[in-house]
Length: 173
Length: 406
Image 1 (cartoon, each protein chain N blue to C red):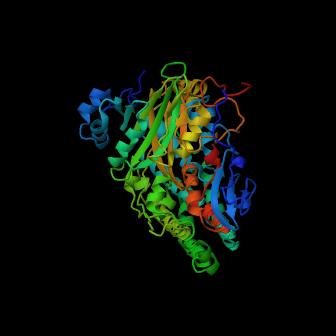
Image 2 (cartoon, each protein chain N blue to C red; image 1 turned 135 degrees about the horizontal axis):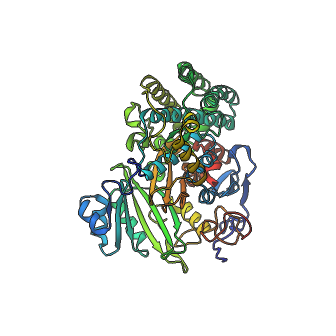
Image 3 (tube, rainbow over the protein chains, first blue to last red; image 1 turned 45 degrees about the horizontal axis):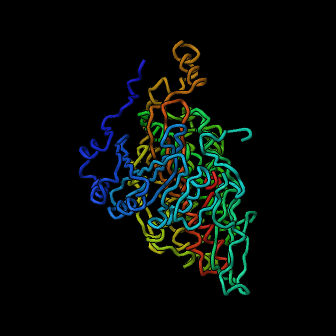
């Protein structure tokens, strides 16, 4: 029995870079990233009225600068998703809000499980400071160029990174 | 894996050349004006703040990890406990995110009830802020007045949800139950007298020279600094940035309501006080509109596989009983995808980022809490000012440690 009000693929979903470039050629963030470095834009998707742009993992800082210049001025949130055991294991999601366009985009970076590290975007938005510390603390992803990369939630001598999927929810590690 | 880098906080050296003048002072984690268990490590030169580090994590409970082990509907009561002064805002944000993942349509009455209760929550939260902020500054009386009104709001919450603080009244797909018969009359009676009460607080504080001198020109933050440091909500609007998600990216039917967004260009603690006081008046306006135009109809979405059936139906109809049993024992599956839902909570922009892998438990739930980001701006606001101003600044940004540490 299928519920008519629950549909798996909502109308207006664009999956893949080609589909997004085709469907949203005038979107300011898409235009800005294409003008900056079309090669570094690896994937894109427009799903549930949210635009997700995947950029190369060594290009996040420059990509953040490009969308900032395009009017996406407010860094709202950043976090990681652990897709263990699949590879690439870690997904970093940056949510950037535009006060002018009144909408937000999601920049996405995929990282391999071995020694996950990415450039810090604190030089673009200083507000990313705590968020990157949190991801470092709970996922063990290093942010290069971060001014003060220490654990933020867990005690400093803690071992392991609790939000990783191979870390148990309860009981001993 | 031991990959801790950086310096532990107490080993941060005092600036070179100032060793005999500067000292490190710990404020908190057990300090009454830090509103919970916040620890501020201050480097001070006499009474002037040179550097300031917020140390957090004392209240870390791993809510995000716990969410991954629960069914979608079991996460709702966890969200109450983050920002315990505005539980309804957390419920709303989480429910909206999951509803968008599911593609559920929420009936108008439920949406309007959500708006009404969200605004009551805003009043509740602002009342606690006003009382404690004034108390930190030394105006003890206001606390008694604001808690008098807050008690009325908590009684309304108890009446509608059965709980005073941890309401869990919003559920995925609507509300947990119909509002009781005299609910609307009680809300109407409350907001009829409430604007006078705001005048009363204003009379106690706005002309109070001590209160004014402690706040005016203190904790200054420019618009550019506020945006760079991730400040949202009333502190952002007090710095002259006209952003309110209720108006800019409407959710839950906010587009049907008329209200003004108070903005001030001063950027100091006083401006935050003025903005919040005006916000309370606007909330009363929204509540009045919600009462006047409350639509009739169901309070739950028409989705039997997601929303629990009514008790009567569950006891009399076989199909409803099956759905009830399946939802409670197995949960409901949510199509794979990711959603970031942002709302304007009393403290600023709250966001829930929910990632689904297609199962009945969320793969990842992340909360963007306004206090967490706002805390980063404390150093900018306090640098070069007196130690006593730290108390005024921390009070004026209205943080709740429960949502910072999560």
